[in-house]
Length: 283
Ligand SMILES: NC(=O)c1ccc[n+]([C@@H]2O[C@H](COP(=O)([O-])OP(=O)(O)OC[C@H]3O[C@@H](n4cnc5c(N)ncnc54)[C@H](OP(=O)(O)O)[C@@H]3O)[C@@H](O)[C@H]2O)c1
Image 1: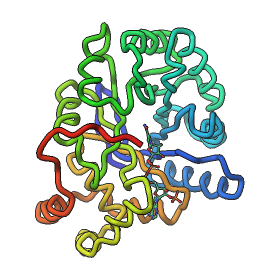
Image 2: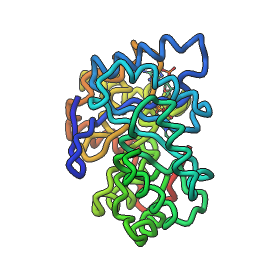
Image 3: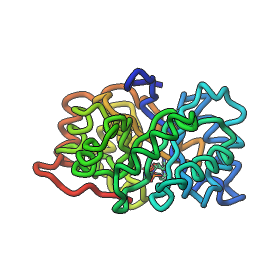
Protein backbone atom coordinates (compact mmCIF):
# COMPACT_ATOMS: atom_id res chain seq x y z
CA UNK A 1 0.00 0.00 0.00
CA UNK A 2 1.02 3.56 -0.54
CA UNK A 3 -0.01 6.31 1.90
CA UNK A 4 -0.35 10.03 2.21
CA UNK A 5 -0.24 12.03 5.41
CA UNK A 6 -3.11 14.42 5.99
CA UNK A 7 -3.14 16.66 9.07
CA UNK A 8 -0.68 14.25 10.69
CA UNK A 9 -2.70 11.10 9.94
CA UNK A 10 -1.32 8.37 7.66
CA UNK A 11 -4.02 7.33 5.21
CA UNK A 12 -3.90 4.59 2.56
CA UNK A 13 -4.29 5.91 -0.98
CA UNK A 14 -6.76 3.12 -1.77
CA UNK A 15 -9.53 1.95 0.52
CA UNK A 16 -12.47 -0.42 0.39
CA UNK A 17 -15.93 0.81 -0.56
CA UNK A 18 -18.77 -1.31 0.75
CA UNK A 19 -21.96 -0.06 -0.87
CA UNK A 20 -24.37 -3.00 -1.12
CA UNK A 21 -22.35 -5.37 1.08
CA UNK A 22 -24.07 -7.71 3.51
CA UNK A 23 -27.49 -7.59 1.89
CA UNK A 24 -27.53 -10.91 0.06
CA UNK A 25 -26.74 -14.17 1.85
CA UNK A 26 -25.67 -15.72 -1.48
CA UNK A 27 -22.83 -13.25 -1.96
CA UNK A 28 -21.98 -12.44 1.67
CA UNK A 29 -19.21 -15.06 1.94
CA UNK A 30 -17.48 -13.79 -1.17
CA UNK A 31 -17.83 -10.17 0.00
CA UNK A 32 -16.38 -11.06 3.39
CA UNK A 33 -13.40 -12.94 1.90
CA UNK A 34 -12.72 -10.06 -0.45
CA UNK A 35 -12.71 -7.44 2.33
CA UNK A 36 -10.44 -9.63 4.48
CA UNK A 37 -8.06 -10.12 1.58
CA UNK A 38 -8.14 -6.39 0.82
CA UNK A 39 -6.99 -5.62 4.36
CA UNK A 40 -4.56 -8.53 4.80
CA UNK A 41 -2.98 -8.83 1.37
CA UNK A 42 -3.25 -5.30 0.00
CA UNK A 43 -3.27 -3.10 3.10
CA UNK A 44 -6.69 -1.61 2.29
CA UNK A 45 -7.19 -0.65 5.91
CA UNK A 46 -9.44 2.28 5.08
CA UNK A 47 -13.02 0.96 4.95
CA UNK A 48 -15.91 3.14 3.83
CA UNK A 49 -19.50 2.61 4.92
CA UNK A 50 -22.66 4.61 5.72
CA UNK A 51 -25.67 4.29 8.00
CA UNK A 52 -27.81 4.27 4.87
CA UNK A 53 -26.13 1.19 3.33
CA UNK A 54 -28.80 -1.46 3.75
CA UNK A 55 -30.32 0.65 6.51
CA UNK A 56 -27.51 -0.34 8.89
CA UNK A 57 -27.02 -3.88 7.53
CA UNK A 58 -23.79 -2.81 5.81
CA UNK A 59 -22.29 -1.60 9.09
CA UNK A 60 -23.40 -4.78 10.87
CA UNK A 61 -21.78 -6.88 8.14
CA UNK A 62 -18.50 -4.96 8.43
CA UNK A 63 -18.62 -5.18 12.24
CA UNK A 64 -18.27 -8.98 12.01
CA UNK A 65 -15.11 -8.58 9.91
CA UNK A 66 -13.58 -5.65 11.80
CA UNK A 67 -13.59 -7.50 15.11
CA UNK A 68 -10.90 -9.87 13.81
CA UNK A 69 -8.45 -7.05 13.09
CA UNK A 70 -6.47 -4.79 15.36
CA UNK A 71 -8.79 -1.77 15.60
CA UNK A 72 -5.86 0.64 15.51
CA UNK A 73 -4.78 -0.73 12.13
CA UNK A 74 -8.08 0.33 10.53
CA UNK A 75 -9.37 3.71 9.40
CA UNK A 76 -13.16 3.53 9.39
CA UNK A 77 -15.11 6.07 7.38
CA UNK A 78 -18.85 6.29 8.08
CA UNK A 79 -21.60 8.68 6.96
CA UNK A 80 -24.63 10.25 8.58
CA UNK A 81 -27.76 10.98 6.56
CA UNK A 82 -28.71 14.68 6.34
CA UNK A 83 -32.12 13.99 7.89
CA UNK A 84 -30.34 12.79 11.05
CA UNK A 85 -27.75 15.56 11.12
CA UNK A 86 -29.67 17.85 13.43
CA UNK A 87 -29.43 18.37 17.19
CA UNK A 88 -29.77 15.01 19.04
CA UNK A 89 -29.83 13.15 15.75
CA UNK A 90 -26.05 13.32 15.55
CA UNK A 91 -25.60 11.51 18.83
CA UNK A 92 -28.27 8.87 18.13
CA UNK A 93 -27.08 8.10 14.61
CA UNK A 94 -23.45 7.91 15.62
CA UNK A 95 -24.22 5.74 18.69
CA UNK A 96 -26.21 3.33 16.49
CA UNK A 97 -23.40 3.17 13.91
CA UNK A 98 -20.80 2.49 16.62
CA UNK A 99 -22.96 -0.30 18.04
CA UNK A 100 -23.53 -1.88 14.64
CA UNK A 101 -19.83 -1.71 13.80
CA UNK A 102 -18.84 -2.88 17.29
CA UNK A 103 -16.23 -0.15 17.74
CA UNK A 104 -15.68 2.67 20.25
CA UNK A 105 -15.04 5.39 17.74
CA UNK A 106 -15.23 6.19 14.03
CA UNK A 107 -12.08 7.60 12.43
CA UNK A 108 -13.86 9.85 9.95
CA UNK A 109 -17.56 10.72 10.05
CA UNK A 110 -19.02 12.43 6.99
CA UNK A 111 -22.26 14.24 6.29
CA UNK A 112 -23.43 12.05 3.35
CA UNK A 113 -24.81 14.98 1.39
CA UNK A 114 -26.03 18.47 2.24
CA UNK A 115 -29.75 18.48 1.42
CA UNK A 116 -30.09 22.18 2.21
CA UNK A 117 -28.91 21.89 5.83
CA UNK A 118 -27.77 24.99 7.69
CA UNK A 119 -24.06 24.32 8.02
CA UNK A 120 -23.26 25.85 11.42
CA UNK A 121 -25.54 23.24 13.03
CA UNK A 122 -23.69 20.49 11.17
CA UNK A 123 -20.30 21.77 12.29
CA UNK A 124 -21.49 22.10 15.91
CA UNK A 125 -22.95 18.57 15.90
CA UNK A 126 -19.78 17.10 14.43
CA UNK A 127 -17.54 19.02 16.84
CA UNK A 128 -19.58 17.68 19.79
CA UNK A 129 -19.05 14.14 18.53
CA UNK A 130 -15.30 14.78 18.39
CA UNK A 131 -15.36 16.19 21.94
CA UNK A 132 -17.25 13.11 23.15
CA UNK A 133 -14.64 10.79 21.58
CA UNK A 134 -17.24 9.03 19.41
CA UNK A 135 -15.48 10.20 16.24
CA UNK A 136 -11.89 11.28 15.59
CA UNK A 137 -12.42 13.52 12.56
CA UNK A 138 -15.39 14.81 10.62
CA UNK A 139 -15.98 15.79 7.03
CA UNK A 140 -18.55 16.08 4.28
CA UNK A 141 -19.48 14.32 1.06
CA UNK A 142 -20.84 15.58 -2.25
CA UNK A 143 -20.03 19.21 -1.40
CA UNK A 144 -19.29 21.48 -4.35
CA UNK A 145 -17.00 24.52 -4.04
CA UNK A 146 -19.71 26.97 -2.91
CA UNK A 147 -20.83 24.58 -0.16
CA UNK A 148 -17.21 24.20 0.96
CA UNK A 149 -16.70 27.97 1.06
CA UNK A 150 -19.89 28.36 3.11
CA UNK A 151 -18.72 25.59 5.45
CA UNK A 152 -15.42 27.38 5.98
CA UNK A 153 -17.32 30.54 6.92
CA UNK A 154 -18.80 28.67 9.92
CA UNK A 155 -17.10 28.73 13.29
CA UNK A 156 -14.77 25.68 13.32
CA UNK A 157 -15.69 24.91 9.68
CA UNK A 158 -12.00 24.68 8.86
CA UNK A 159 -11.88 21.52 10.99
CA UNK A 160 -13.49 19.70 8.06
CA UNK A 161 -10.99 16.90 7.37
CA UNK A 162 -12.30 15.55 4.07
CA UNK A 163 -14.75 15.93 1.19
CA UNK A 164 -15.75 12.62 -0.40
CA UNK A 165 -16.75 13.21 -4.02
CA UNK A 166 -17.46 11.45 -7.30
CA UNK A 167 -14.21 11.56 -9.27
CA UNK A 168 -12.85 9.17 -11.88
CA UNK A 169 -11.28 9.13 -15.32
CA UNK A 170 -14.61 9.80 -17.04
CA UNK A 171 -15.84 12.32 -14.45
CA UNK A 172 -13.01 14.86 -14.24
CA UNK A 173 -15.08 17.98 -13.47
CA UNK A 174 -13.67 18.39 -9.91
CA UNK A 175 -10.16 18.90 -11.34
CA UNK A 176 -11.07 22.38 -12.51
CA UNK A 177 -12.02 24.06 -9.25
CA UNK A 178 -13.12 21.80 -6.39
CA UNK A 179 -9.96 19.69 -6.01
CA UNK A 180 -7.67 22.76 -6.11
CA UNK A 181 -9.94 24.50 -3.58
CA UNK A 182 -9.75 21.51 -1.22
CA UNK A 183 -5.96 21.35 -1.58
CA UNK A 184 -5.59 25.04 -0.88
CA UNK A 185 -7.72 24.71 2.26
CA UNK A 186 -6.08 21.48 3.46
CA UNK A 187 -9.20 19.34 2.97
CA UNK A 188 -8.53 15.74 1.95
CA UNK A 189 -10.31 14.69 -1.25
CA UNK A 190 -11.61 11.11 -1.20
CA UNK A 191 -12.72 9.99 -4.64
CA UNK A 192 -15.61 7.56 -4.75
CA UNK A 193 -16.59 5.35 -7.71
CA UNK A 194 -13.07 5.38 -9.23
CA UNK A 195 -14.13 2.49 -11.50
CA UNK A 196 -16.99 4.62 -12.83
CA UNK A 197 -19.58 2.87 -10.60
CA UNK A 198 -21.71 1.15 -13.26
CA UNK A 199 -20.89 -1.53 -15.81
CA UNK A 200 -21.69 0.61 -18.86
CA UNK A 201 -19.33 3.45 -17.92
CA UNK A 202 -16.61 1.12 -16.63
CA UNK A 203 -16.66 -0.95 -19.80
CA UNK A 204 -16.62 2.16 -21.99
CA UNK A 205 -13.21 2.87 -20.45
CA UNK A 206 -11.92 -0.66 -19.85
CA UNK A 207 -12.78 -1.95 -23.33
CA UNK A 208 -11.54 1.10 -25.18
CA UNK A 209 -8.80 -0.30 -27.45
CA UNK A 210 -6.36 2.54 -26.63
CA UNK A 211 -6.93 2.03 -22.89
CA UNK A 212 -6.35 -1.70 -23.21
CA UNK A 213 -3.15 -1.00 -25.13
CA UNK A 214 -1.89 1.55 -22.56
CA UNK A 215 -2.78 -0.81 -19.70
CA UNK A 216 -0.75 -3.60 -21.34
CA UNK A 217 2.25 -1.31 -21.80
CA UNK A 218 2.00 -0.16 -18.16
CA UNK A 219 1.70 -3.78 -16.94
CA UNK A 220 -1.66 -2.86 -15.43
CA UNK A 221 -5.17 -4.10 -16.06
CA UNK A 222 -7.67 -1.57 -17.44
CA UNK A 223 -9.19 -1.31 -13.94
CA UNK A 224 -5.86 -0.83 -12.15
CA UNK A 225 -5.02 1.78 -14.77
CA UNK A 226 -8.28 3.60 -13.92
CA UNK A 227 -7.33 3.54 -10.23
CA UNK A 228 -3.74 4.62 -10.95
CA UNK A 229 -5.10 7.54 -12.94
CA UNK A 230 -7.25 8.74 -10.02
CA UNK A 231 -4.35 8.66 -7.54
CA UNK A 232 -1.69 9.72 -10.07
CA UNK A 233 -0.69 12.87 -8.17
CA UNK A 234 -0.52 11.13 -4.76
CA UNK A 235 -2.62 13.96 -3.36
CA UNK A 236 -5.99 12.29 -2.84
CA UNK A 237 -7.32 8.92 -1.73
CA UNK A 238 -9.96 6.73 -3.29
CA UNK A 239 -12.36 3.92 -2.37
CA UNK A 240 -13.49 1.25 -4.81
CA UNK A 241 -15.77 -1.69 -4.27
CA UNK A 242 -15.66 -5.27 -5.42
CA UNK A 243 -17.18 -8.41 -4.00
CA UNK A 244 -14.87 -10.73 -5.92
CA UNK A 245 -11.37 -11.68 -4.80
CA UNK A 246 -10.07 -12.14 -8.36
CA UNK A 247 -11.35 -8.70 -9.32
CA UNK A 248 -9.64 -7.31 -6.25
CA UNK A 249 -6.31 -8.76 -7.44
CA UNK A 250 -6.99 -7.52 -10.96
CA UNK A 251 -7.74 -3.99 -9.68
CA UNK A 252 -4.61 -3.81 -7.54
CA UNK A 253 -2.18 -5.07 -10.20
CA UNK A 254 0.81 -2.73 -10.27
CA UNK A 255 -1.57 0.04 -9.22
CA UNK A 256 1.02 2.23 -7.48
CA UNK A 257 3.50 2.34 -10.35
CA UNK A 258 3.29 5.84 -11.83
CA UNK A 259 1.78 6.12 -15.33
CA UNK A 260 4.38 7.39 -17.82
CA UNK A 261 4.00 11.01 -18.93
CA UNK A 262 3.33 9.88 -22.49
CA UNK A 263 0.52 7.51 -21.47
CA UNK A 264 -0.92 10.02 -19.02
CA UNK A 265 -1.12 12.52 -21.87
CA UNK A 266 -2.75 9.93 -24.14
CA UNK A 267 -5.37 9.12 -21.47
CA UNK A 268 -6.04 12.81 -20.95
CA UNK A 269 -6.71 13.19 -24.67
CA UNK A 270 -9.20 10.32 -24.59
CA UNK A 271 -10.91 11.44 -21.35
CA UNK A 272 -10.52 15.16 -21.28
CA UNK A 273 -10.16 17.40 -18.27
CA UNK A 274 -12.74 20.21 -18.11
CA UNK A 275 -11.77 23.65 -19.42
CA UNK A 276 -14.41 25.40 -17.27
CA UNK A 277 -16.32 24.95 -14.05
CA UNK A 278 -19.02 22.27 -14.08
CA UNK A 279 -21.51 21.37 -11.38
CA UNK A 280 -20.33 18.52 -9.13
CA UNK A 281 -21.95 15.25 -10.18
CA UNK A 282 -23.21 12.83 -7.54
CA UNK A 283 -24.51 9.27 -7.42
N1 LIG B 1 -20.39 9.46 -0.65
C1 LIG B 1 -21.22 9.00 -1.56
O1 LIG B 1 -22.26 9.60 -1.84
C2 LIG B 1 -20.87 7.74 -2.29
C3 LIG B 1 -21.53 7.42 -3.49
C4 LIG B 1 -21.18 6.25 -4.16
C5 LIG B 1 -20.19 5.43 -3.63
N2 LIG B 1 -19.59 5.72 -2.44
C6 LIG B 1 -18.56 4.83 -1.85
O2 LIG B 1 -17.56 4.57 -2.82
C7 LIG B 1 -17.44 3.16 -3.02
C8 LIG B 1 -17.00 2.86 -4.44
O3 LIG B 1 -17.92 3.37 -5.38
P1 LIG B 1 -18.92 2.43 -6.21
O4 LIG B 1 -19.15 1.15 -5.49
O5 LIG B 1 -20.07 3.31 -6.54
O6 LIG B 1 -18.18 2.23 -7.60
P2 LIG B 1 -16.79 1.62 -8.10
O7 LIG B 1 -15.93 1.23 -6.98
O8 LIG B 1 -16.30 2.59 -9.11
O9 LIG B 1 -17.27 0.34 -8.90
C9 LIG B 1 -17.88 -0.74 -8.23
C10 LIG B 1 -18.53 -1.65 -9.25
O10 LIG B 1 -17.53 -2.13 -10.15
C11 LIG B 1 -17.55 -3.57 -10.16
N3 LIG B 1 -16.17 -4.00 -10.30
C12 LIG B 1 -15.11 -3.75 -9.48
N4 LIG B 1 -13.98 -4.27 -9.98
C13 LIG B 1 -14.32 -4.87 -11.14
C14 LIG B 1 -13.60 -5.62 -12.13
N5 LIG B 1 -12.28 -5.82 -12.04
N6 LIG B 1 -14.28 -6.11 -13.20
C15 LIG B 1 -15.62 -5.91 -13.31
N7 LIG B 1 -16.35 -5.21 -12.43
C16 LIG B 1 -15.71 -4.71 -11.35
C17 LIG B 1 -18.16 -3.96 -8.83
O11 LIG B 1 -18.85 -5.18 -8.98
P3 LIG B 1 -18.52 -6.47 -8.05
O12 LIG B 1 -18.73 -6.05 -6.64
O13 LIG B 1 -19.49 -7.47 -8.53
O14 LIG B 1 -17.08 -6.83 -8.33
C18 LIG B 1 -19.16 -2.83 -8.59
O15 LIG B 1 -20.37 -3.08 -9.25
C19 LIG B 1 -18.82 2.63 -2.64
O16 LIG B 1 -18.83 1.24 -2.44
C20 LIG B 1 -19.11 3.47 -1.42
O17 LIG B 1 -18.40 2.96 -0.30
C21 LIG B 1 -19.89 6.88 -1.78
